[in-house]
Image 1 (tube, rainbow, N blue to C red):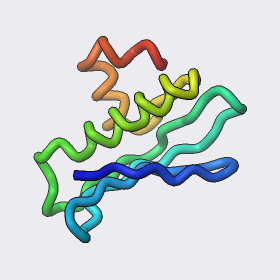
Image 2: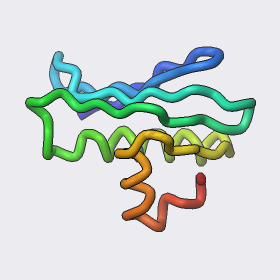
Image 3: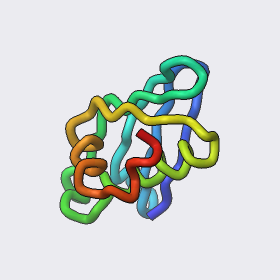
Image 4: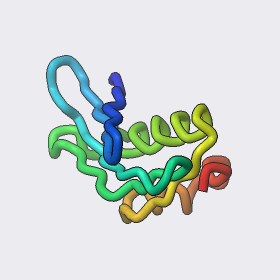
Length: 92
């Protein structure tokens, strides 16, 4: 599975693909220059239960660490990943 980031001035998203199929997408908005707000995570039904959503969150965490920014997880799914994984909370 490959995860790509598409970043624009005020919004962006991470897209997971497997082969030629989109497995999932997680959208975010910029909140200033040093924060993103994850607002929605969606997984294609045929990829449910395969860890696609978590891979998207992990890609956002990598991005946040690289850019030295913080994440505000408004999306319930993303928040649940942070709640279950203490090692990711350094970007909150």
